[in-house]
Length: 370
Length: 150
Image 1 (cartoon, each protein chain N blue to C red):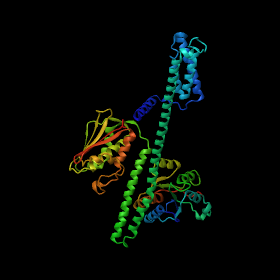
Image 2: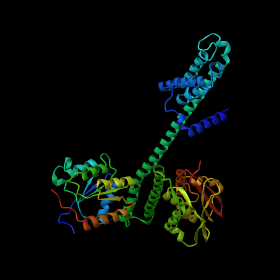
Image 3: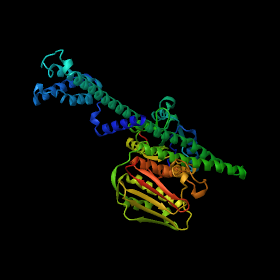
Image 4: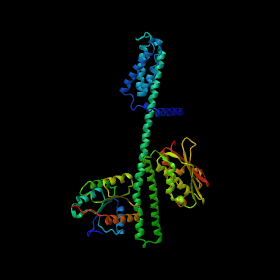
């Protein structure tokens, strides 16, 4: 039961998504009632024009008119149109024509009933479609507002956190500079630790800032040449020129729609990870494109340490690291989160395949993600 | 290199810690000019206009340049900048914005309002010393500052 209700709701959303003009801003106001009356008069004239009064078929034009009235104004105008239709049917189309008589209850009772019930059902279901759509839009607006607030909050919080951090770092420097001769080595170690931790927290808040800023800024949607983006990335990344690192492109990367700078960041982050989490003497990174599916899929493949299957989702969580601080050159654990956010802001999807010990492949699309 | 009497430098900064770091950097950079601190925007405007607590002109000599933080309690740095740069008597005083904000919007707005430069607050003490010695080198060495109007 619940499932079929859900299916109906989804169908309603799909219908109104495709035909947004079906959802009026307001419903049941005086203009809509006047429109219902006008529609019914028009329907009557059309009906009189196409067939003689005694031909039966009295509802043939009334059904669409009732539906239109409900679509335009919801439940009340739909019911009004139905009632007008009933009056026309009994007064004009039932013998003796053009007059009211008690005969109606014999000759047209059931057809009138069918018309009435149909009018009620049509008006009611269209009304509920309108209501559902409006609630959905309201909720969507709320969710968007909450997300925006959250990003702003993160931005402000991480910005304001930096000030006391700078103070902590600075005073530690002052102690080191001014009191070096008065403190023994152990205390100096503590002071160094204070500074190191302040530094670390600064990079963490910087990552948070970057992440939240991604939520606030607009992502461009223009046609970009992915090959030239990769050329820039290759030129900028000094780690690509270290010993044993080999980056290759399998075929052309072609064009895509998106924000060139952000797409560059995605490649840069993924390639940096490929090199960083790699214990082989020859570190291989392969970048490519796959056009077999509905949307082009880009991938970055490496022969690194791999990601255990239970961490396939959690690697994308902010500040989640799979290794201790000292291993694989540290880092904040925000890189993949930022990558994921960039891709999701584009409307795409990212996932990975990995064999622990043998390598990882990150796949992503820039559209068609759910 | 410098005039016989050193010009005052006005620092508008609400955070004691950042003010401490700045003055420490002044010392390290051997910058000997007298420093006047205002900890909010209203006080800074009072100083520039020689009014309120700075009414006696001797208490508020015209500064050689102003180091201005943007995020201040009450009247903030952006407003101070706007007021100072739209006043013909004050707009010749170089105003160097020094702030943690690196929002493109802030940078553009400050230059629009007539800021003479925009400096991102260094993250550590070493950076402060570095920035301040360069500031000193340029604004008190290379650059030629306007003579006082009054």
